[in-house]
Image (cartoon, rainbow, N blue to C red; front, side, top):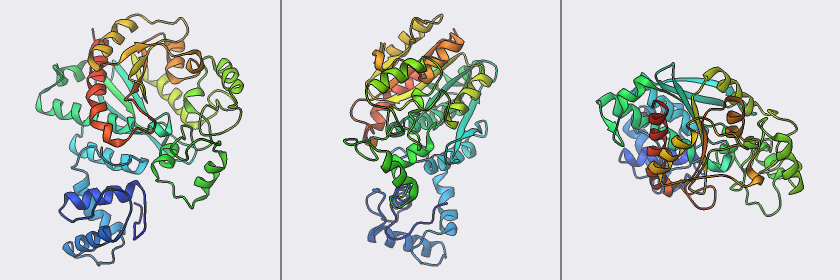
Length: 376
């Protein structure tokens, strides 16, 4: 666990403030900045637990905080880094032992790419999030969906008119939680501004692109959703013509298809998973992309229309500039099974976390509808 102290900044500081506030120790705004008010709250908490009141959040202080954090459900009010995800996943597994997790690969910097599995192991669908760094809000959307599904299953209840216990007996769900953890950590502030990693990425940034907010790529500057072997040569032609010819914050396709460990991990898992359907969560636009070239798998439009009705997001086809080398494109090309890319929410990426509840209200029923429709 990260050691935090006066002047620390980032998602883990925001999570610390969240925990202290919910426990009744006034840490002030959950803004990720460790200032005077947070310092007083840390010392007060340490005193209440017979710890040295140093004001430094050492492992011993985290050990006192974590059991509480594990009970809090999804952290949907703070920037959502890979470290925040790990704590949420541990809480999910403790509350719902039926949720199994594994690591399907690692990022460029060695961060694990986590997958959570629930339900039937024979008929499976896969949802994934955070291919793009500044679309990190899609990860807590998946985390909340898992909490809600497992809670409904445990109490024998329904979500959106669907009996979840019965659904999970028929269909299994694999969730790849954060495809691009390094990029997410850069955008959310987990990567320190005085680090070599931060400054290497800053050196790749392009003029006019806000940094790090405009960063979509992995930490090497490869756009992961342009790195799949599905019209990759055409994607390269289009992106090169637009000036995206080298590593940078967005739209660089990489030196060759599957050049990145993150996309390699996605392909390996998909090949092993034998999925009936996949959904790749992105932001923004409130549409659902569902085709690649002229490939329209059986029932893909029917299922897509059910997702449209559930979410209010319209089925759509992307323009040519964004029509190649994505994960959905590769899945459709190789499996001829339904694959979707919902563009969640509306605005400028990264979408503000204040939009979380509104976005979830559209996305969750859409994902449940996709699971239900694949069973029909």
